[in-house]
Length: 186
Image 1 (cartoon, rainbow, N blue to C red):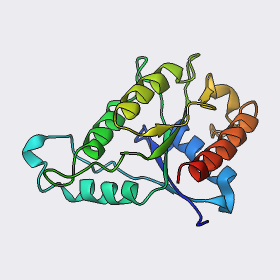
Image 2: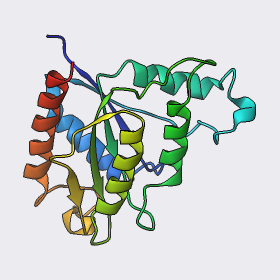
Image 3: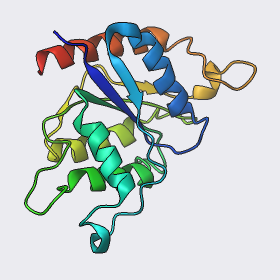
Image 4: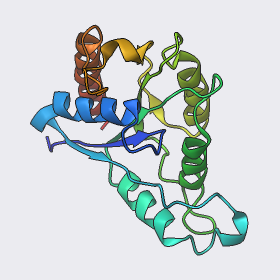
């Protein structure tokens, strides 16, 4: 079996966001068992049907990266009990066909979801909303285990960097489960 490719999509564009840091910790936990790439998409414009065909270059680029993935792992913060607008915008572009009458690149892709937040919900509500959307787009969602990290500030080191303590074993369980999920959904 070939080494799977996981594309991580972080729902925050902030350079040092807790969810970006969580994605990097997930990459470490995956190790050499899979190729793991963080999708950079800050340059993707707001979805606008006036510019849909031909799509802007940043949209073509992210579609190619996602199309090449064996699985997508979302790392989302929770803003007002929902996932961020930048993530919704990206998913809107990815859900559209690359050309009239074509298919979309998320169809059938296995997906995992994690998230960290300063609040007590640990992104559980945002994750549930995200599951609703990506299920509609025919992604194969690994609903268990999901990782929600509430009060993320309790797991920061003295430099305010994410250093999982209480949640480290849960991240490892999710890594192992997602790798098995990818293998079972090839």
